[in-house]
Image (tube, rainbow, N blue to C red; front, side):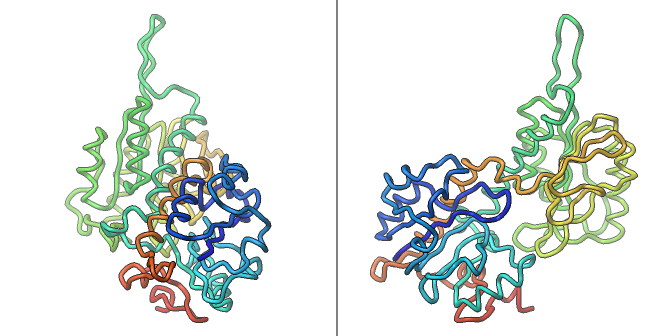
Length: 373
C-alpha cells in the first residue's frame, strides 16, 4: 500500500499530515510512503529528514501515482489528485458542511473520503481525535496571542515601586480549547474565570483553579449535545446568560471565546454593547471567528479595535504552532489507520462504528447520514 503525503495548498496552512516519526511507523506496517517535495518545510521538517525516515520525496504527480491512501491536513483540491488508485482513501479535515461541493467532487473521483473531524467522541477513538489535539494547542496559543496584544502584565507583581495587579481573564466555552486556555492563563498568573452552557463543565473549571460563572435555576442549563458538544439553548437561558455575562465581562481584561456548534454558525456570545462596557486596552480573542464568530465585529484574519478593545480574529490558529500541531495531527492519523490495519491485505479495514461515522463518500456517491439528512 502506497501512502501519499501532500503539501498543503490552502492559504495560510503551515501544517503537514505526516512527520518522520509517523513515516517510520507506517513503513513498519509494510506501507510505502511518498511525501510531496517541500511538504514539511513550513512545519520545520526538511525533505532530507523524510528521506532519512524511509520516505520517497517527489512532485505531486509522482507522489500520487498508484497511491491507495492520501493524507492531508485540509482537504486537497479535487483537480490536483490525478494519478491515485481508484477507490483510494483520503484522510484529512474535510470541512464537510462548509465545502460540500468539494465533497461531491471527491465522490465523482471515486475517492473514499474520510473526515477526521467527524471522529466519534468515544474512548477508543481518543488517540485519533484531531479536533481535540488541534484545539488543545489552539487554546494555549489564544492566551499567548492575548498576552501579545495586551499592554500589561498577566501576573501580579510586587515591586519596590509598587504592585502590579493580575490580569482578569474570562474564558467562554469550556471544551478542549477552553480548558487549555484556562490552564495557560492560570500558569501566566492571571485571575481566571470561565463559563459554558454545559453544567458538567463547572467541576472541570474549578478543578483548574478558575472561578465558574454559571446561570442558575434556568431551564436548559445542561446544554449537552451529542459527543460532548454544546447545543442551541432556550431563549430564557440566552437572556439570563446575556445578563450574567454583561455584568461579568465589564470587569475583565482578557476574554477568550471558543464556542462552536457542529454544522451550524458559531453562537454570538459578545455583542457590541457588551464590548463598550469593557475597559480600554482590553483584549478579546475569538477562536470561532472562521465559523462566523462568537464576537460581534470580529473579522477573520484580522486584529481589529472597537471602543478601545482589541478583537483578535486569527485564522487557523493551530497552524500558528505548525511543528507541534503537525506532530499531533500526524499521530492521530497513524493511530487511526494502524488501529484498522490488516496485515494480510496490507491496508486498513474500517469497522462500522468509526468507519461509518467519518466516511463521507464511497463508490462514487455521498454515504454519510449527516450529509444526506
